[in-house]
Image 1: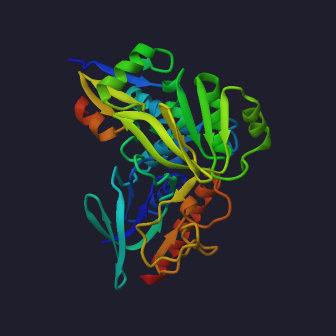
Image 2: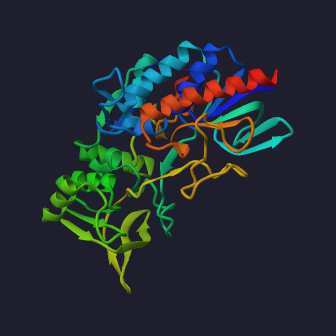
Length: 300
Length: 78
């Protein structure tokens, strides 16, 4: 049996793993990917020591750091279930099952989905969660941005420059993103803003060709080739049963990264820690590991 | 014999950058196709991969969608 399993390899999980390796613990990192949301980040200008670094560059540095310490890692594996039998934790993934005396959850957050018919079928076939990545493929076409926060406004401004027409479909009465961006969008002739509007369905034939939008009691169909979903993030915590979470689904932790279950710790964006930042996640990862180490030392 | 490797990408997509970083670190030569400016190649990518997400990696005619490190390694024999 392992001493420790770390679930997730974003800034929190990676930092925890470097500390664990330096303490020569018997441990394993299990993660779908390396870098988590940091890999999706554009320009980072607030990570101490780097005046400017891009998300992928910082992830490459994280990876290099892990490699130096020969961190044992199962990449491309997703934790599906976590249970505890006596003092032993059992982590079931899509490929195998692992046992450990302690676990750190650092599974982060992912893009929130619309949850409407057609969404799954047209994912990457016109519907995307990364305007920064896939936006240029929709140059000259009609597109719809879903959301009203900063990432939605950012995507709208980006697409307004290259798309033929850009619809912004916002479920709220007003934009919640920065006023400077909202004003620019409202003033753009190629942009049509729809407030109090809810996406009802995504349509297409192989690829997206329309979206149904419900406003008041009316539903209308907009003919668009691209749909950019920018409606925030949700924690990757649904595989955790019996773990205390807040209303947003974030794992509740105390100031020592302990959850309500003895031997189970959590760190980074998946937790209810105030402020979600790369540097905070990294710091939390180190805190969680030190606490887990202390816990395991006491058990011996 | 060296395999023919193409990466269909956009300059702003983080996983395109990660893919290219990985290939460079593995000393694999590849053709970088920027589909944000080359619309014919963008259409070619969509037709060949059946989807619109980047990156798309072509290794000797076999298409991989996304930065799937394991698959890329397997196809390259790394």
